Length: 399
Image 1: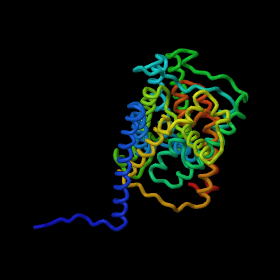
Image 2 (image 1 turned 60 degrees about the vertical axis):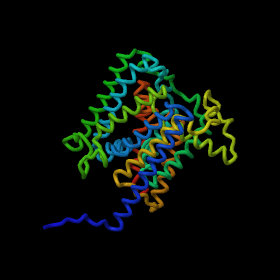
Image 3 (image 1 turned 180 degrees about the horizontal axis):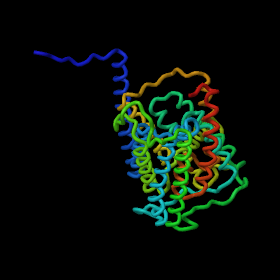
Image 4 (image 1 turned 90 degrees about the vertical axis):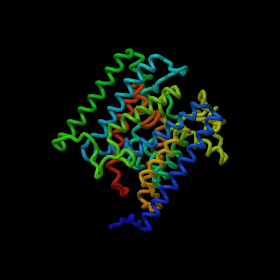
């Protein structure tokens, strides 16, 4: 007769299991309470947007779909699978966004795209953002999901991101009236069919460029990320294409629920403004907060703000995903050079996003998805900044 015994966990393994169970229970508990409060105080739509944000956090964490790493791979290794996945994500988004925005409303909600001018502020702000995302270790969505997943360094980046947003709103008026041209939307100027066709051609050109460059560097191309462990839906990493399609669904859901595409960084400006006002600095006379609708947000609770609610959801979703994957393991060991990179990167991220009409989500994902040409200008400028940031990483002890 034979008997089997369950393997004994080491003290470290037992501690990891306990920590992840606790963080998982905490994220679920907070999520349920917050969703209930949002339904009772602000209605089902605000609660639904919170849940969309929570789903985005899970998706971003498990898919490891960082815009930052994908762009860095192109520069550092010549591999373009991540950037090609982004083109697929954008293509699907355009195919759904354009008919919806052209229609103007859905289920009683007015719909609009993210359209902004093409000017020097977009070029400078996006370039700063590109440098910042490589030094800080993440983009707007990346900072949220890695911080929520327990990365202490990214909490520093997030704090600096908020501070940079405050500085950007303070100096916002200085960037108005810079050289540029008015907003230009393919949908508004050429119609829905032409807007889709032109967008798909542009995506194909970027796709082809990455294929050509990767083959030139390596002789072959990879269809997905190289990973040491098999794909897992509950532990990650997901294939790039799965993350791309899931994030397209997040953006479409946001458009239908909020009436406009997904955004992230306007909430950082709001959080920073409330903190600044709390310590006695009056921000209401700043031009940024005197715009239509902006001043009202300063007087309202944070949970009434759609972007804030979704951002909180992203962090809770990432915490839940990290806990389920047994990977929630925060560490306070932060090398000084890495810490300095987080501060500099965060400040550049916050400032750049404010003057460039958004970040990788609002300007790049939402802008290009809305067929606004400022999204393409943002992409080109931010990619150049990201290339410089990649070259600067070793100076801060970053891989």
